Image (cartoon, rainbow, N blue to C red; front, side, top):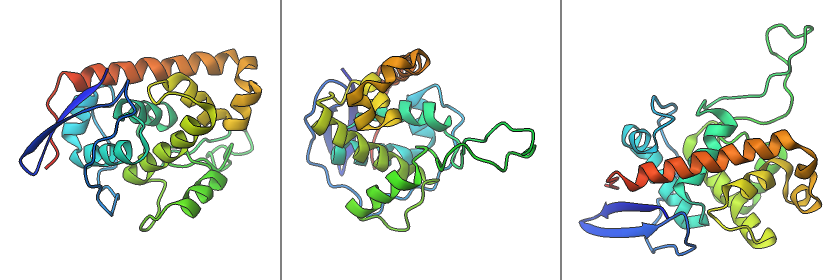
Length: 210
């Protein structure tokens, strides 16, 4: 169970993230754009969110808006891009020695594909959408996972199955495509493990919204 203590406008609230669907009524900011583009503490959620306070605000906003715990959001970003804001999947090919050929249209913190990003933009209102922006990326992750909660009945704390649905698509998850990919299932286990680690770290520190 993930608890994150937050002080907001002088009021102390306690919200549950990892094992509860309950979302407290705290006003979201209209502009979810963040300025920080990197972190020196990718293995420590507490230090990471203290280092980049705007990331704390962004992940909290996404959590309250869509329901994905902060620890799960961060684990997705860790495994998708390793917190590299402009990450892209290069294709290893001797004909492209400088990596100018890409495996897919995936880009940014969340590695959102062009098509899925386009679907997100049709359903949300966002200022100057940018996949290389952390705030926009975690909002996208929250939006995508919310659909998995509803259509696949996956719990918000189940980072393992959420990631499989994120990677293979919801239809792919339903058809069990991941069952034929042991490497992917092992990778999804590491997503769950990292989410659990982040949750434990968050529990031990006092993060404040100001």
